Every structure is written in C-alpha cells, then in structure tokens.
Length: 84
Image (cartoon, rainbow, N blue to C red; front, top):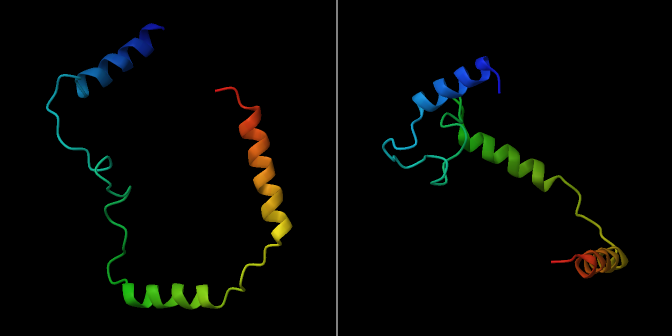
C-alpha cells in the first residue's frame, strides 16, 4: 500500500469508526435503495393500472414437459457432481 492509499483508508476509518454508535441500518432492516421512489405528482393508481394491463396483454407462457424434465436432470447432475 502506498502513502496515498493509506491516507484514503485513514480518512475513511476516521469518518466511520468501528466503535462508533450503532444505529439501525435502513437497508438491513428491509428498506429500499432509494427512499424517494416516486416523482412528485406521479399517480400510483394509474401506474398500477397500466402495469396490470401490460401483464394481462402478455401471452401465456408455454413450456414443454420435456424442458422441465431436462432442467431437473441438469440440476441433479450438478448436485451429484458437487463435492460439498
């Protein structure tokens, strides 16, 4: 580590001391990344309606039974090959 890197680490450690007060972490408590998720004036009911409409207009998924069986076999091969 060079002198410049050490200076940055020291500045960080001084700003966030390990023995500092322990306040509950907003994100660890299940909070979202951005506290401001909506723009002022955004109509959440309209947004929900449009998302629901978009979901209704999507075609139903089609999956062949053989695709499901093949995926299960691949998982079994990986699990059996793993050395835990």
